[in-house]
Length: 178
Figure (spheres, one colour):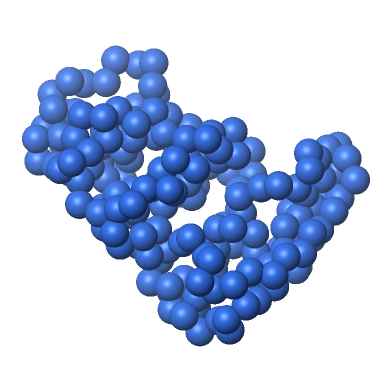
């Protein structure tokens, strides 16, 4: 289970908000080698990732980890991974990759959450109910909500995908990965 206090929208029409002032590059466009080299030399990992459109940030992060993984601080790793996950159109489509990254033994995993989310998680009881709305496949997904209304919205957002369903689970706070 992955906990998100803001219950960010994960829709195929929503890619997130671009906050980087740098140009955004598509994966198959020749990225300016000078800019990339400068960002990597300055160890501005976040800006390097932000220069890629959301769907290609998985590929960019994979390359970044392969070449510079040992130099990336643990907190930066989790914050970058959060941004990639939040802005990706279909994180479930990369589930094996995300699962591997989430299984990292790096410290500071709590930085996958924003400070408000960390505070909320600390205030939750030892176990709590979560909801997941879906309308196709089997409901085994990555994003769950504390709010049944949010899950219901996800279940009904694409009527052409089939019967809307909301499933419920009970999670122990200590089992929340991030």
